[in-house]
Image (cartoon, rainbow, N blue to C red; front, side):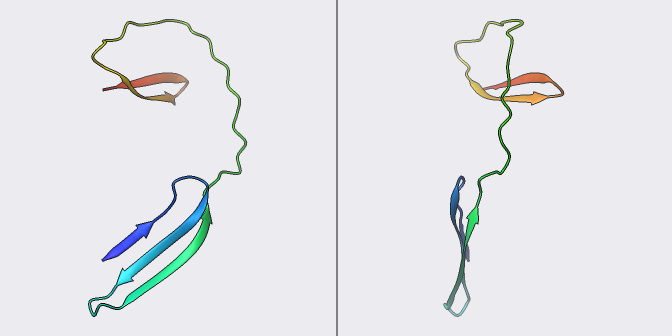
Length: 74
């Protein structure tokens, strides 16, 4: 059985614990920095159109692909 714990953002410990069939535990820990070195690009926008939304749905996510903005709804 393996347990893996990792912080999603920032600097944190990555820990792996293995429990062998004879019950002995073996674990290793390592600090991993998960912060990007890339400076975020400042973007601008312009509203070119609006569309009505169903009041029974909500936006789940937005994604740019080939300079087109896609909206995922649920």
